[in-house]
Length: 214
Image (cartoon, rainbow, N blue to C red; front, side, top):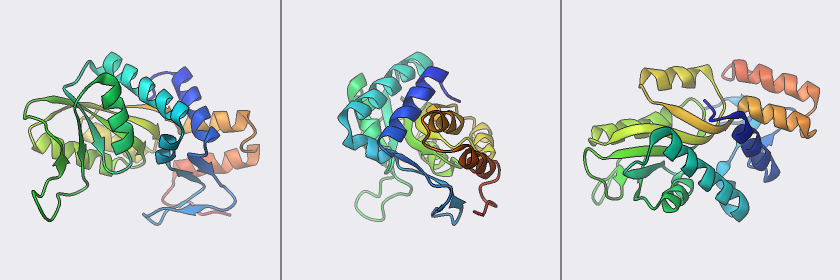
């Protein structure tokens, strides 16, 4: 869920401003999963724009303290949220760790990189939530390591029903700065998309795995 409508609108505005989110209903993207999509989100581009990365950093940090209290550390999900998570940790003057998709096959064979002790509290930072599987994989690794996950915060979510079900199943609280609904509202308001494109984007979001461009 979003923290509030003002934050969701402002975040959608800045993401569109730097083309972190690309809307292309007429020429859909193909995701790694094979899904055809009229939208592509690359929040890593935020890091290239100091005013916007500072906005995301400070907004995330303030909402973390307000919603979850001050954790012992910030955990980023590799690779997309390493940069953003590090910025948040720096702003809060907290230790930072990050979680790989899998344990390394060499060296110390870590999946969790950085120093943290069993029993400590973390808030997990993500850049993007689609189905939630990779994000929850990081939560599982932390829990398996004896770390208490207070919750997760992400820049943006597509708001798929499957992701909501996955987070509820794993009992993980998720808050995001913005979401799909807020993005579409902002894109339409600024003439980034037309009314016809809005209809296509809404249809895709209902059943993305089965959607095909017309």
